[in-house]
Structures are given as C-alpha cells and as structure tokens.
Amino acid sequence: MTDRAAERTKGTIARYKERHGQAPAELLERVRKANHTKAAIRRALADGPMTPPQVAAAAEISPREALWVLIAMRKYGVVAEDGQEGDYVRYALSGKDPRA
Image (cartoon, rainbow, N blue to C red; front, side, top):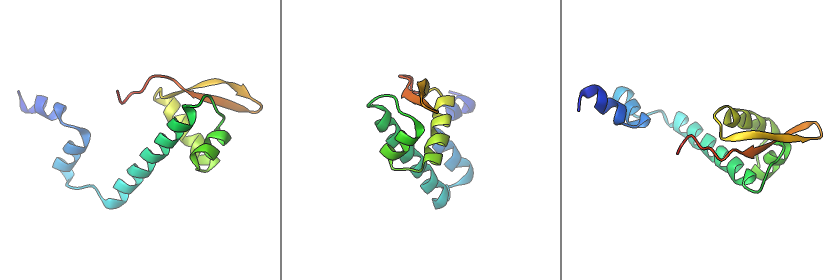
C-alpha cells in the first residue's frame, strides 16, 4: 500500500491528529454538543414528521438551533421536507444516513 493509499484509509480524526496534534478541548466540546443535538433531533423525528418548533420542544433546544440543524441535516440527506403544517414545513427522517 502506498503512503497516499494509507492516508486515505485513515479516519479524519486520525489524519488531523497526525498533522496538527490533539484538537483543542473547546473544539471537541463543540463537536460533542453538535452530535448530541443531531442525535436528539433524530430521536424526535423517529416518532414521525414534525415542524421545527415541535422538534425544538422534543429535543429541548431553542427553535432557532432546531431550524439551523434541520436545514443542515436536509442538505446532507438525513431529513427531508414532508409537507406543511400551518406556516411551518414538517421534517421527517429520510431513511438515508450518510454515516452508513
């Protein structure tokens, strides 16, 4: 295996650590919080489609944070729009998870 091929098989975190050393604690905490928020939103949407305010209440986060995370999750195909409820778009899990 060439060095370039070996580099591609390493995980992103391993490559970062090799190049830059351990990530700052503040960055690691932000990543942990973001992962926790995305997991809470996935759990909330497992019960069915919801609007951003409903997701926020179920995930115990602010409506603004819920909307931003839902938009990002939609961009990457994790959630999809599922109709309208009043003035709000409903979001549902898409069944596609880019982590798989």
